[in-house]
Length: 327
Image (tube, rainbow, N blue to C red; front, top):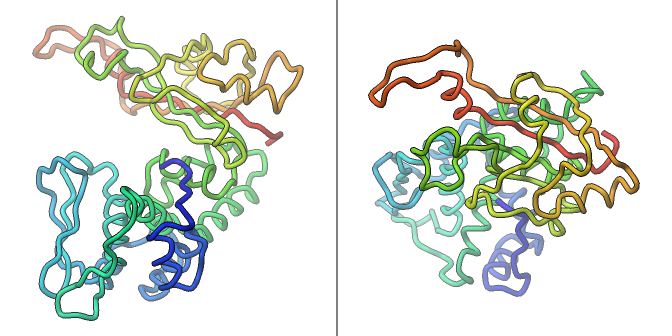
C-alpha cells in the first residue's frame, strides 16, 4: 500500500467527516480501530481478529477459489467473508480489510443495510486499507513496541526491528515495512526487498541462469516517498549490486559499506546522495532471509537432477535498508 491521500472534497471524505466529526481520514481510521480494540478488550499484539469478527456481525469465513482476493457478502443478521485460497499469506490483512468494509453498513437493522454508495473508484478500497492497517497494526502499539526494542538495544539493526515487529504483529515484512516508514515515519530511508527471480513472471520455469536478484517490493519514509521513483516490481527490475552475492553467501544480518556507484535502480542514487552529499560510499543494513534446514547436494525430481542450493536461492530474499539519517 503506497502512501494514500484521499480527496478532501470527495464524497467519501464528506460522508466520513459527517459521521465521525473529523476531516483527517487517518485520524478517523485510528479512532474506529481504537474503539474496536477497546470493545474487544485487546491491549497487546498480535490482534485477535476472531472477537472483532463477532463484534462486526461476521458469521462465517470461507476460503473458496476466487478471481479477486476476497469479498464481503451480506446475509441475514450479518456478513459472510470469502478469502481466496490464493491469498492465504496475506489472510490477516485481507480479513481486516473486509472487516473495514462493514463500517459502510448499518448493523442496527436485521439485515445489514448499505449506508454509503458514492465515491470515486477505489476510494473506499483505499480507506479500507488504511483501516485494516490500524486494526492489525495499531499505530500506538507499533510505536510502543518500536520504542521497547530500541530501549533494549539502541544499536539494533533497523531490519531486525522490522523482522521482530512483523513476527510480533503476525503480518508480512512488506506490510510492516510500509507501516513503519510511509505511515508512521519511524524509520527514515528506503527498504528494498530483493528475491532470486526470473526476468519476467512468464519465465518461472526458465533455467537458473535466467534468474537474478530483482526488486520484489519497496517502502520509503514519508519525507521521501513522493520523490522516490523505482521501476514497477511487476517488471522484476534487476539490481546490479555485486555485493548482493556476498550478502547472500554470508547469510547473516549485517551493516555493509557499499560504493554509491553501485546504486543503479530508479532514482535511488539521487535520493541517497541528496542526504549524503560528497560521499563515495554508504553504510547500509542488510538482512538475508534464507529457508532453514537446507543441505547442499542434489535431489532427483520429476524434471531430473536439481541442485538444492539453487532451490534454496529461489526461496531466499534479502532486505536492504538505505538510511537517510545517521541511525
